[in-house]
Length: 136
Ligand SMILES: [Zn+2]
Image 1 (tube, rainbow, N blue to C red):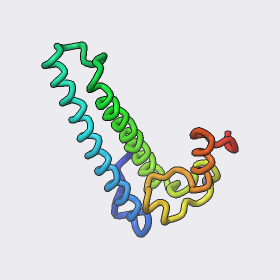
Image 2: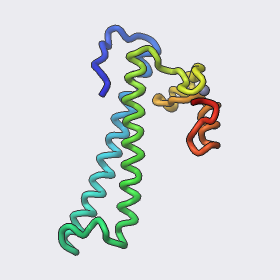
Image 3: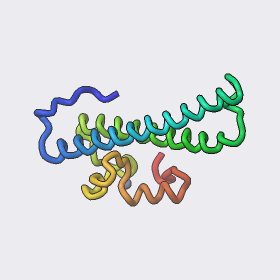
Image 4: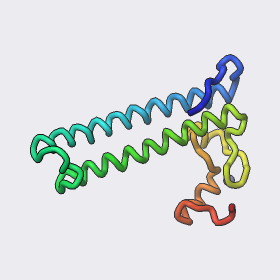
């Protein structure tokens, strides 16, 4: 959980990124609630049809629910990334690639304010199943 930021001390880019992060977090939380409602509604109808306690092992609708749960997991991860980014903003470590220490370009941060890696390192990780063989 990120601490409280004194907005008065934040100016220029820092303020801009903070706003972007807060906005992004609100959007993802919205989606998360939407998908968890969907998943819960499915649970309800399953319980009506098939009784309590068995819905987790049900076939049929379960694929759809798995998709919802998958989305929720991804959205939960993004929320964590956003919280981390807010933390880095507080610590004045924001905008630095976690792999190479290089600066993450402003255009990339504006598109994805919780980006942790520069484009180059991100690509290296994508090509290596999410790990960067050049660091630790
Ligand atoms: Zn990098």
